[in-house]
Image (cartoon, rainbow, N blue to C red; front, side, top):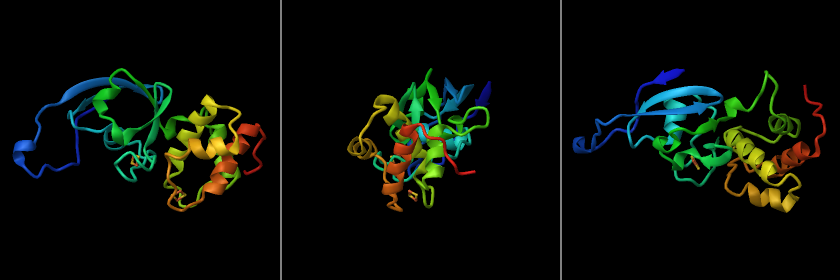
Length: 179
Ligand code: FES
Ligand code: FES
């Protein structure tokens, strides 16, 4: 079991706002039991990135708009910047680092590579996590439904066309040719 201590990078302007409270939580992250000690104000994305060092989950807006922080919690895609770490007590979390199995990329990851569904890559982990959820919910999603399903994820490089193609490629079950 991985045990991690409370840590927050948010510096309180007013010392009176500083919290000395630290709460212990247990959860499963990428198949691994984790026990963490968190400040009640710690966001789930902070726990994932700063305490667990799983930096594949990105922070773009911190206001639940861009989807860069998307992870799966109990099998549902959630924006980890809009939840407290405490809300993940007892939960099962999967981050982008946990999608591959046995050293093999998840078919959605392979499809993004095959279709060049990324440019700078900043939005990619969140896009992939949302796209996996999208096809789990609606395996036969039309192009319009894919675009609508990814509405909560913003690509600042505006590479949406190839992202949609990647989701469709994954949906097709075709084998990628990219090495
Ligand atoms: Fe969470 Fe943008 S960082 S939605
Ligand atoms: Fe750059 Fe989407 S690939 S933000």
